Image 1 (tube, rainbow, N blue to C red):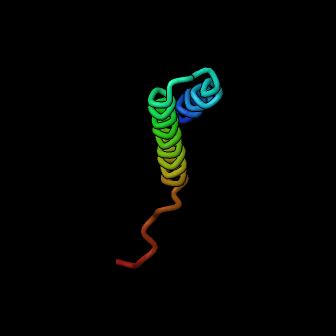
Image 2: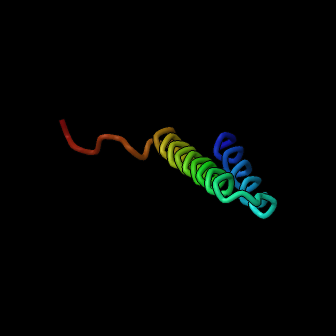
Image 3: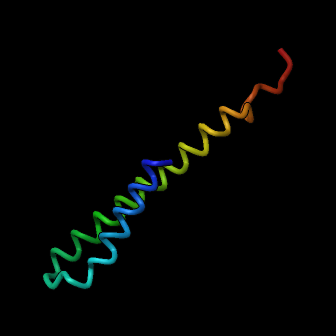
Length: 65
């Protein structure tokens, strides 16, 4: 979860600094990096949640063998 918080904070920093970028190409690149960091934050949340469910035993085999 720390990783996803870091990625989300980095993406927000990039989003809030968009106003200071005047070059169109640089703005498009910065926006791409912002979406990339948001994607990484989402992956971190997904894997963190999945590992939390696995630790709690939510994915046990319920079928009889």
